[in-house]
Image (cartoon, rainbow, N blue to C red):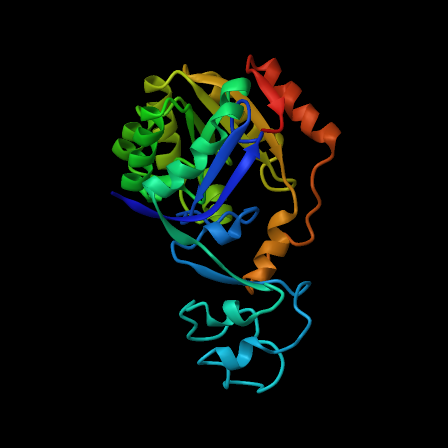
Length: 301
């Protein structure tokens, strides 16, 4: 049985597909989006996070760490310690749980045992299970086994993807799921490289191939002020989306600042720390623009 690295399992979710859902977040992503709201999802390895708000400076973490003698000998360890192996000793020693390890290995059976607990909510709301990330396609064998296991229990499934993966892998996964949520960020390749770290050429090609195979596809367009909210990009997104036969919905997702604090907990600084979210009126303007292009568009997931 396959195992995979999971960093969160969120119950009673209403933002990752229809109805009430359980969202399983798989760790690892080939993109490094500047606006990422789950920066702890990007690394394919477990990571240590540190919350300054919870820490009251007792320093119990330092003697628990084999590297704790390096640097100051008093007070708490910094968010990141050079040479850290995420052994978890500092986490166990922290009385306020200010230090946490994000990401642990789950078996398919363990995930299934959790998601089936909420079957009654899925049935009553036409909900189900969504596999997100990170990028779930970075763990294809684990993901495919999870989808097969859910299907065997009569659970509806969705996969949320950035589309940066091998085409064959994407299409194999698509055949196993009821719904695909596909992120469409930027149409200009140079800007896509600048803000996500990868080209959008394989992403757009994959989206085209997927739309010809799967007839239940939702596009998710993050709206990032000053980055992808210009008229040229929005018009290009609308034209491309309207040309895809499998698209049933386009969701405009306004940027939010949750990722800024999460980056800080990882010992990183967000490049968009000073960016403010778009106003509801700005979001609605984009929704109306997409609707004018013949798309079934809505604000939010």
